[in-house]
Amino acid sequence: YRLILKPDNTAKVEIDGESIYEGSLKEDWELLAPKEIKDPEDKKPSDWVDDSMMDDPEDKKPDGWVEEKRIVDSKATKPDDWDDEEDGEWEAPMIDNPDYKGEWTVKRISNPAYKGFWEAKKIANPEYVDDDNLYKYEDFGFIGFDLWQVKGNTIFDNIIITDDVKEADAFVEKWKALSEVEKAKKKEEDDKKAEEAKKAAEASKEEEEDDDDKDDEED
Image (cartoon, rainbow, N blue to C red; front, side):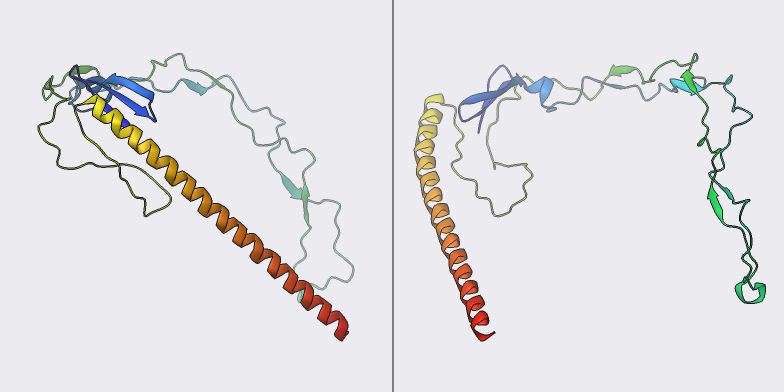
């Protein structure tokens, strides 16, 4: 991962030698206060309409619209053996209403009074100060990595800060050679672990089969 800062306050980011970003430190990186801010004195008018849609005032629920989902079964009768004293007061069961049409909702239409999304007007930021030396640092006290990861104990190394491109390129070549060795060793270790796990699984399977054979002999 390489970050290149240039005297014209532009930056370039590369990963494994491939450029993934080029842009302005001033425009893209929020290193300066914004040139403009929302006017704190600008207030939304009281009659401003934010809702782009509204209920249709002409839309009315039909007279025969049925919203009751369940109704009392009018055909149900109290069983002959029902005892009010022991069983309590008998109530007819509820059934699905065959005339049920669902919950009625009023139709939505475009709001003729809609004025759009309101936003305070922008004004010049009194705290904005331009800086043509954003790229330049007299000294580096530390290097920081701001990232999110699911596994801890990550080691970061092979870090270089330089103003010499050739020195950085040479450092990268050295890192590539080391990285290939590390990858090869890791693959070797992973293959070894996989082989050990395979042998352990086979041994466990053979042991289970032996136990099954012994159980069959005893039976």
